[in-house]
Length: 574
Image (cartoon, rainbow, N blue to C red; front, top):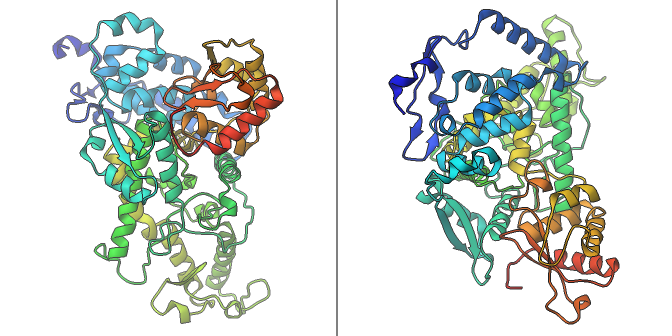
């Protein structure tokens, strides 16, 4: 495109870089789009004042909800952005108006609904090839244009791994390969198994997620709250309440579905996974072998999560929602501790009140009627008696004179210096695939949905709307109606098994079962004389579920439950 013919796009003091296509990684680099005058966003001062007022009102509403947050969404603005994102050439060559990037990646993103922000993310972040594929799939009116454009096929990088060997070490090796960096689609196959394609690959991402949640006494990476008693905490910010409700819901689903709460080999994190702080009592040496191993895992984890987002694979890593905020350079606050270690936060919060009393000159200060020294609390990380906060911390006990030091040390370990190296390593790994700054378009709980997928309640109507019937079945076939009745009554664990059996992943993409790609397809398997003796089979690469023509709904349910229970963990010819 001739740059000289597009001067009308660069008014209002825009310093706009049209060459935003990076030939090395096929990415559209919206980060380089900046405005010379960052104070006006290229629009009138009165509009800026209105935006600031709306931002203030939105924050106040989040603290004490009065109206639905949806009331702040500008549907006209969202519609305008959607029209811009449907234009093939501007999207592919980075000619999206700068004000869209500025609003989307700033505090003004509340003006747009989630679908619009997700659409922006998908079409700006992943490079020209994937962007065109995305638009080809969703924008019907551009089909003719797509037919005339030679679209390079996205390369596929196929690897074979051994299921019985250390999966995590194999995954770390794979994520270091150059093909990963160059945005090819990863496909995994297991030795001695014939399955290939999306099914085994989806399972690979799920299995590695589980590996990262294991307790590892040699290289501990997560703070384990097993020894802490569970307590509920309140918050003054409604947004944080909503996010924690989403997080707890996701955690409960993961626990119920995977049985992790019954298996002591997995980390228990009551408010989501949070890095185990590094010891600050001694100077941290990044050359220390244990420290290097921890940072290597976090760097791998960043690459792994970014690759899952890029290839649209759902994983099962229930990060704390604060983890995502901190990874996006959120300024830490003392009150954040309530979302990581609520019991400890309550105690420390009480301690801050005692510190204020001491500064006011009050004498004989007690904690709930007791002297602090009688609590026998030493300077170690709660739950980790060998983790000293200061030198000789095991033998240094809490008293009114060192109380402020103790509170500051705990806060620093959990929220600042103790986790900065791990977060930086995670971001470094993530940025190898896509820029983590693109996630600023989402709220923390929305990032969790994007990464981990979601579960939903299934009704017969939703299932019939979301599935496709072919090769002998129609949506009014009795087998299909029996199947939707059985699926709508599955519990969470059975849903987990069914999805893993049909797709290789235990989670659904954002938007639920209707957004599976390819669609869940029900086909007839009638090559057997006695269908009641056969089990359902599936083709995970295309989400085909093959069901024999059973004689009753009871037999269908019995055979389906047996198949999803026994056949979800391997891939063979059916």
